[in-house]
Amino acid sequence: MLSFDSPKYARCPLCNSQKRLKEMKDKVIRYTISAEDMRRELGVSSLEAIEEERELKQMDYNAKCKACQHLGLAYVARQIRSADEGQTIFYTCPVCAHKQTENS
Image (cartoon, rainbow, N blue to C red; front, side):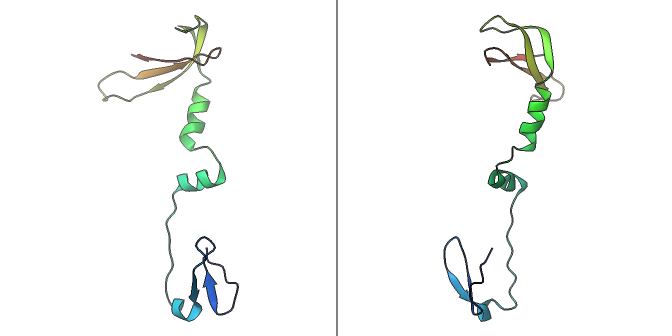
């Protein structure tokens, strides 16, 4: 965003360059910003991370952690291979936070 500190000049607050307003007359200034750039600038988690956190609340009480042997793991299932193959299940242990995967 340009700053108009003077009635004759516009200044860029990032690089401090100045342009005369007469030079800018009838020119279109545009820029593009992605939703992810906005989230990063505002410190908001991405939609994918929020969705994954929500999905991790599903529990498989028959799965056992390979690290601490705790019975009951949070999981999320994703289709990461081709459509004719099974899904991949990503488990997270609620006790030791160990992560493991299973191809089904």
